[in-house]
Amino acid sequence: MSSRLPPLNPLRAFEATARRGSVSAAARELNVTHGAISHQIRALELSFNTPLFERGGKRLRLTPQGALLLPAVTHAFAEIAAATAAMTRPATSGELRITCVPALLSLWMIPRLHRFTEQFPDVELTLIASNDAANLHSRDVDLCLLYGDGNWGDCWARLWSRLELFPVASPTLLNLRPLRSIRDLRDHVMLHGDDGREWNTWLAAADAADLQRGRQHFMSDARLSTEGALHSQGVALGDTITAGSLIARGELIAPFDLTVPANDAFFVACRNEVRAAPIVRVFIDWLFAALESDPMPELQVSARTILRSRVSKPEDSGDESGAALSISSPRNRRKIKS
Image 1 (cartoon, rainbow, N blue to C red):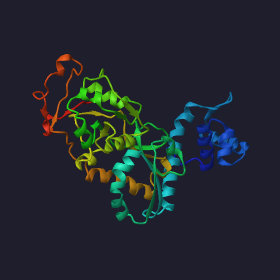
Image 2: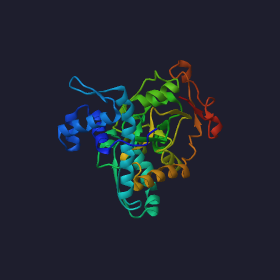
Image 3: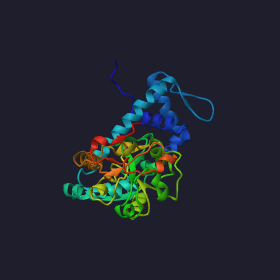
Image 4: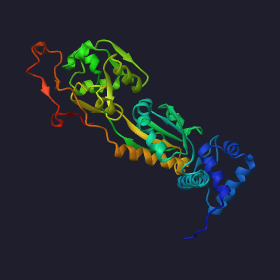
């Protein structure tokens, strides 16, 4: 097998044309003429002795040979770009721009940020509260921590943490208005950090999908619903990452012994060409190391809590004292698997 590689410029012309779907678009991207792109593609086809595009129609289509070549070329250019970034960007100094899920930024990252600063004092961070996956393609952003399914395409993404969801409320609120059974939720304001799907998931797992609900407030993200719970405005859904320390400090209480998997998970993601940049890598490594070395505290729930499977039955209106479960022990904890 010959080890001779095709010339670089024709490969760039081929990759840009295949990605953009036309010679004109590739010419604009590479800042060359239409004729230059066409010439380079013909030269590449001659070197392979096979056509790479099917001519005809407004949009070029790859031949089977072109489709075989494209992934390897795209990967090679991404690796070259990453290596170039690694060579030209200092490892432990400079500016790093990060977007992060608002609740994760406020309740998990910022309380631990001094540890990163102490380790890398010459890295200047710009932190932006956002869960917009469009930031992955912004040249003004280096790294994103996103809540989603991880399928954003044309980028590098790695699962950072899955999480479990459960109701949380402030001790002040529960002292004023008890929450001893699920049906007591009807007397509380239900705080949503999404469009309602996550509360629906938890109630279904608690056999309470048909619960008659009282007042509800919908907020743009989980940070706001958690802050609402902290200020005794209602009952929110917390998670094992962002609410764990608040529960450990006694600022929030988990009144029910039931957790359900969140619909999505936290991911670390960035553009392929910046993944290998040393300043990006050190922050990614720190994120995973911090999560591993500082696990969430054991979920502490209120000492007397009951979960009823039939929350609206007339017989549930009787004395609850005999049905209350002491669940301070982890052995009594229920978890619904996905």
